[in-house]
Length: 430
Image 1 (cartoon, rainbow, N blue to C red):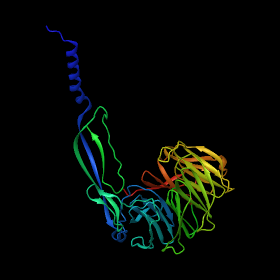
Image 2 (cartoon, rainbow, N blue to C red):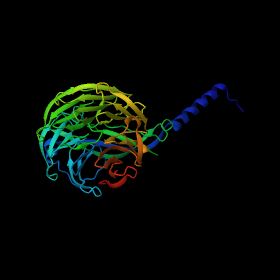
Image 3 (cartoon, rainbow, N blue to C red):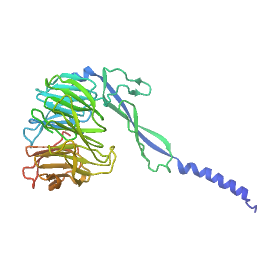
Image 4 (cartoon, one colour):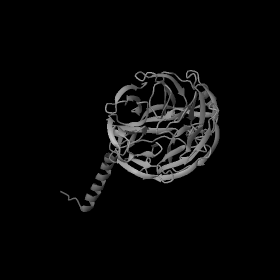
């Protein structure tokens, strides 16, 4: 028998490797794709069809706002659901305002203010079933994207017509067979997050309150203070509008107000701006010309804030785009508005929205539920009770009734007995 020489053995081993490699590293798999195509509509058509169906289901809830017997729920980028809460045990949806790009809202008298991408609409809601736009302020929200300047697809070119706006997306599912490096991506999942205005592919493999106006939650970026509106034009700027004539808001100015701004809370003649770096305090006794009083800096984190005059309450949470690792409730002594100081800090799980009613402080704390504190002594808060509801994002407390946004639903509680907080109703149009 002929012996295999070392040279022949090396050739055979090399051939074996070449035969084995393709089988180890590549395999035929089925790839499911969703093609997302933006839909554009004439602005005139959008404005003529703001009255949506009162039975419009709620897929998600962003901001919450209350005025008189009505609750206003924002569905991000879709519009505003108007709820008649005359009977809190049985809230009834009475209208839906189809406002593309909407995320913020406020109400003064019979005028509802709502952002529509970059523009601010003033809407007469004296009859919520037959509303009409009484005023439009253009380019107030400079960081909002309405699809103009985006590509409809690779072949169709760029949208440059300012008379149209992004209103929805068409999703089309398709399945392709492809070769994927199985050993490098075992059971791999592929995902591409689309930017609004572009065709995109996603795939997975198989095989504060003031008189005359309503109440906003702590996550609000648009607030009313008497006859003025203050809103975040973009993450560093504050825009001011005069709403003395409520149906016809008048833009006044925009100015650099801080860095990475996220929320606004009005109290008396002061504005507390929550940012990813800290809290900015402004005096608005001259409403059209805010004066910066001070800044309190904390570690980087997402940061809503509420205040009661002597103290401000700030929640910091980690695990988001804001960065940072803090999960805590900070209490700031703001009796000297020129020199705010940290009065106390309390560890939390993952806090978000918060609100205060006299000496009661409510805090949304992620999986730990909603915590209710006695804030008579802010430097030594006392935990009174806890509501077992997870993922609460924001809330408003008024007249011993607590409204909570969580898990795409609106919950209402009676807290007249702080030791026995009672669920009144749960509302969802789904």
